[in-house]
Length: 288
Image (cartoon, rainbow, N blue to C red; front, side, top):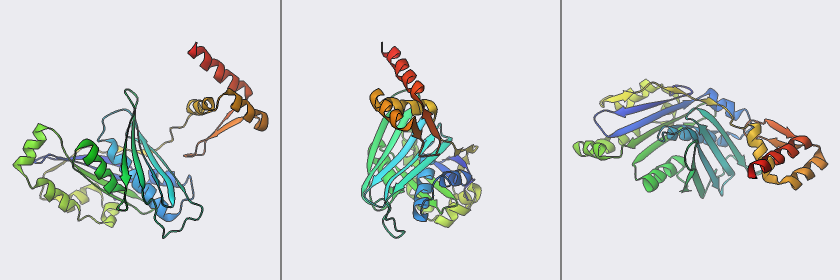
């Protein structure tokens, strides 16, 4: 497969084209073991994880990038998130009457959310159509960024992989494209010959030789990715605060604590009466 639990950047030296390869194995399994997902949903979740990892290196920032789909199919919600281009987590929710042969997402929307540590939060939304996640993301780049992009994704419940090719924007890139007007079509047609099995089984070097041995492709050192949940007691405290103090007191009166459960990793954060009173007291100090 593509180098497991790594993403790798590549550049076509004689063309205005960049690329990304990603392979996930242990990271993918660490996500799947959190919930007993049906097989088709495992595959879809793997595609989302590969896709968000591919996209993370197209956006140079520290922070969180997420893909979240809501559709009319059997998967009510699918979300994959990567922090600082390294730390992955993902989750899915599905109908109680789930059947393997049904449509996974169907008609719906895909939200691409960028939440940088510095700067403003941004969200782009694109329609989901029957031809899949990769095509929806290609539409997003073309409509929102005016950047030609092709994406290939594959997952089988054990491994997940992806490849992205993108025309570089800017005047220098435009000159290169004009120098080889057929370059984009040639490279993307070659890439389109990749099969899901090859995407999952070939290592990066073998895959690039198989597809582009007549092109000049420069590869960069791969970067590791891994499963890590971004939940914390501080973020859970924000959820408690959003309840309001009266509602939080009512929960404590009934249950003894306010418990915040992380759906991604099953971590539980408990807040007793003293914790809640202190939380709202501290918040009021900051407001005054």
